[in-house]
Image (tube, rainbow over all chains, first blue to last red; front, side, top):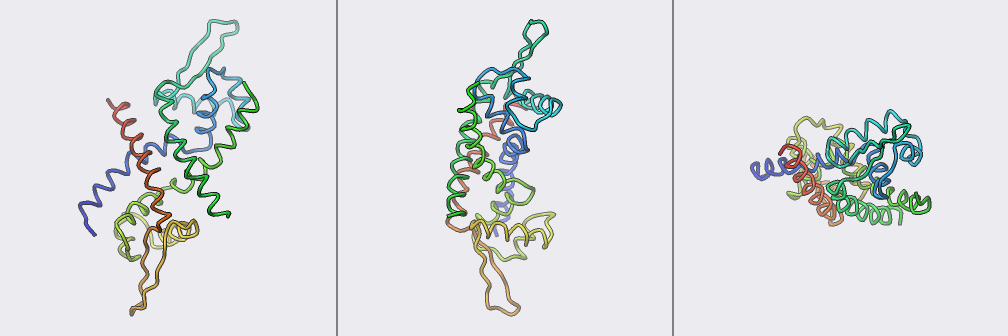
Length: 113
Length: 113
């Protein structure tokens, strides 16, 4: 086996792994998918994702914010309310999610055919 | 928020989740990437993937075989040897992996810019 080509290959794996890390885990996908619907308040987001706790939602949103995929806005209401939305950059995930969905759909049809 | 559209969205998540399950975990990607190089014996595959045990490699290969992504061939040599290769169908993962890699690369550049 060609050692050099293979170490090149491993270098390719790092960004693939990065993308998978962002999308994997139980909650990232449901949060990103829900936020595709627009600007959503924390409480509504929590209601929309069955089984998620406020603590977990807050942690996941912080990570998505850190990765510049989600924007958090504090509204000057009483009581204060906070909304979340996908950033323009966050919407760039759409192609990857659609590609994964396409492959996953074909796979499901093939395996359970 | 439009409840009906959202339940549609959740239905879309299932195939995305299927694809992620196939690609996630520590070893699937390095195995699939190594097998892109052609037909490889078990022992060589084990050597090519630092840190993997024979037991783990065998388990992961069985799963990939079950998902029709990898083909196993027993060679009538003494001692018997076994080779593995990506199936034609297994190569269909390439588009998804490339899309993930593209997004991951851009993400890395953006976040660490």
